[in-house]
Length: 556
Image (tube, rainbow, N blue to C red; front, side):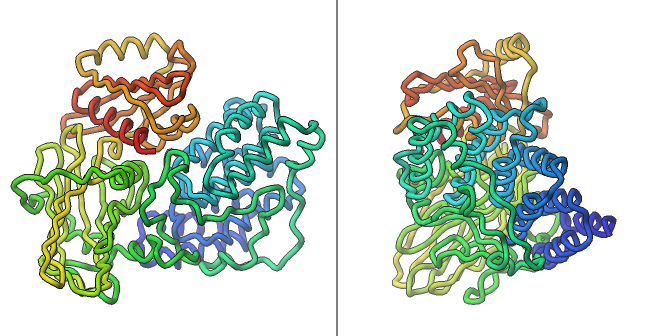
């Protein structure tokens, strides 16, 4: 049976999105019924990592119950190690972050004496997910940090610093948790502190729930115990959220079995394989990815021509939306009373390639006509835009697939020129930065020690880009490291002689070979004044790294 599950997991990574829901259901049921405990936890972690949007909440809930109810400490230790390893991945699905947070919060103390797994390192890994997490996930991450604070005074002090910064967070649930932690840590004795954050009790025996896509709201364990309840998401779009989000409408797309508000991104991004039933089918639309993008030979034809790009929209909300999309796989790029424009990376960037797409929703009572999207051609990027029906009926949604390949490093993102005519004859033109930036094609790069960094830093002197700026609010070091990680940069510890500064690295492969880049972020004591310097083996790559990191820091 284990062999069958392995085969299904392998097939899942290559399967069409239309059958992923069924595959996920079969894998989760087989793993639940026939795998031993260790295999089960391993399968669930891999399943969420590969197809998180199709995995119901009840699946990771059950994994928590299995580990919590086990009487084998070695298995709980194994689960904590596996969760930490899964959380170290630069990109993690929210469900995987939730599962890792609960397992490390409850059982992280079992592995804190192992190399690379100290409680402080666990906290750093979990908190690196905080900037790009939604409100419920943040609550679980913070609860895990609170529980890990029991391990040592050092960890407690670090978590107290984080909690102090969250006491005025606009999300009421997260704010309450932060205030409670500060009171307990600063004013109460250790016995009471430990009693509040003690481990969750075992769950009562229940019939094994079938891990189906509809199981999200079924028999999953109540995670309220020990402070691991999921938070209220009502305030998730606030400006005060830490290094994430923007005040416009939107959110993350809903996976199968999850409920989302009508205005959420779920209706916009429900299906990249074709438009909604209310919209006419775009030319070339099909049920699989190849059909969607017009076949395998996509890069031979140029993108739709545009003589010159208009000046892109630089309003605060749009800049913040763009920055968020640069570190996330999906989001809303623009919205007004006429149209909603979204973005999704349909599969991870790999081998210089990205498969992405626009999503459009007509919010007016009249149809749109002459709908076009054009991106001016550039030598640095090969782009292929899918054909799109120029007519978009009232209230309808449609999408446009885009395939992109990096040829050379580039400092600035491309700009999409979007135009259409409203039902009353009014022409509309929009120019939006497209979240195709050098960090999307990058992966982390690190050196072993300060001398090696210094040597490479000197090698890249001629390429240096630098910018000094002030942020609208203080940014903590842990959040900044998480931001760099979300932008595919590897943080390097003990490199800079000033411990307040941050050093990171990235690398990418272009048509002419591999390129490396180094980042040095100097942080003033105020935590609002910063100077970012980047050097690389290519001047445009250094500029691209600096531009996108600065854009993210300045829009929080």
